Length: 164
View 1: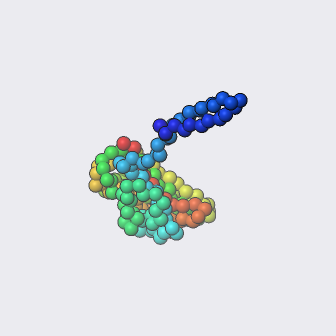
View 2 (view 1 turned 90 degrees about the vertical axis):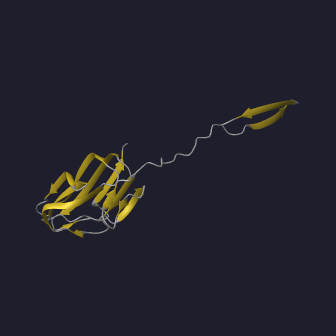
């Protein structure tokens, strides 16, 4: 509670005294154990090699500093349940298979082949238990051809956050 505020008014030679209080809401903070990240490619990325780790280099959110953009890897700061999602944008006759790996085990795969100059994207999501120190990353699978696209009007991205 805030300190009370006294106000007064004089009306018809009568002193009117008012006392009011207001409840102050405490600022909302992110708990120390929260972990979340979101990063995307700053430009198109050549990715025609199988099992190439994708390094999403533009980091927008990195609560807990567990995502390492120079490696394209999230390293779990603690064990728990996490959500990971990634989006791959393609155009034309490029095609890609991408894999989400947790501790070098493939836990989800997406594939997209937009024919005849179609512009689109595909998203994969996984809810997984991750142990402290485990690496989580997205890499190319097989088959692959061409660039993975990322423009201001449509990004290829990688994100994750802890649930518990």
